[in-house]
Image 1: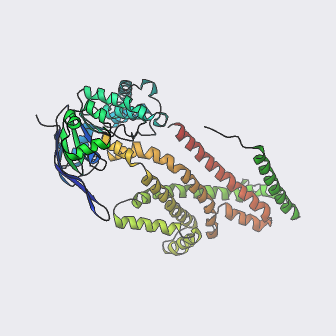
Image 2: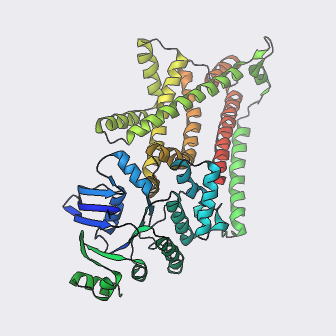
Image 3: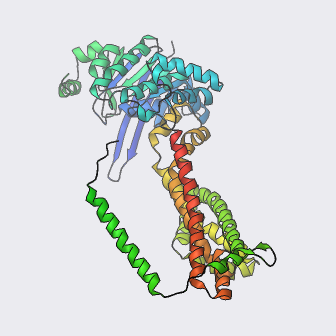
Length: 248
Length: 258
């Protein structure tokens, strides 16, 4: 089976005044359809950069990335097609503050999928109902809690029927008591057969949901395996130390 | 919102201060020992002899007309220069920065003289055209700065979200950036437009018929400068009050719809 995402020796670096920082050092990765992959590791390890390179929010210096059969290096058109096949959830939600919850979810349907206004609205209503926000469709992001905003963001990302859902620290900006409402919904999405890549610091969540866990450190995939392997029997010294540091 | 009640003596102090200021002002006018008479101004609003608008109304029309055209041209040009200010192409950007600096850091009066007497002589320009051109260029420099600031402050996260959704650059600009940028730009823009209406009084020096020029003519005929300038100031005040109020109303409407 051809993998849905195929990264081959992807490198990325940027120069500061004093030195060149390598964020990704020749990383290769294959993700199969339906697979749930969690990315863990210390900050600055390259997790977010890896995730953001998959829908070309972060340009890479060398290597190649193929998503849903589209090679990202090839053309602007390929980038646009990949972005239509992927949804993304951000740490700080990034809802559009001038649009209501409903409009936030509907905008992709109208602009990208070219649905009519009324079709888009009724589809958006369904999606918001699925994330438990049927009563809040007309509220603006400023009037929603962090957990509610992130649920709107999930509905928005799912609206255009993506094949892959990219989640960049989806619960890091939430108050502790709001984390569960978001992880619960992501769990449902995972159960529906969605292919997901999740950068997370919630180790319990990663352990529950992941088919495969990647430990990224200093720009490389330092260790990978099933959730059991990674959390119960870490092999490398660095991973052992990381898990110890976060008191897992 | 949590609001705290202020102690009563704050208001008492305020009333006292305003009272002292008011008495001072009254004393100053009373001490002038001047025989105030506004009645003659009626004829300058509406000319009874020919039954047509008088000097002041003509001047008011001139001010409105010149300001309005300058605001429209200045805003359009300002948006264009504003986008050039953030282009990555260095030569264009430098030229745009230079343009903005020249028009923001020199007096409008000098700009007006240069445009009318030097450029205007070379390519034959009426005083009105020279006035509108100068005010438009001057206005565009400020609008460009306001536009640049708003665009550069725009949250990158929202743009990432729009890209990730698959919106094109144009769709992002049209549906995500523009509505929010417009709302943020409105208060500084209205301030700039009010300023421009006042600055438009400078075109009187190249004998364009505006409110200020009319006032000068009325004074020359009537010798009643205090009353004339008082009324002219009042007209400018009302004109700008209308402009700011409309601006505030639009601002409120944009906020309500968000």
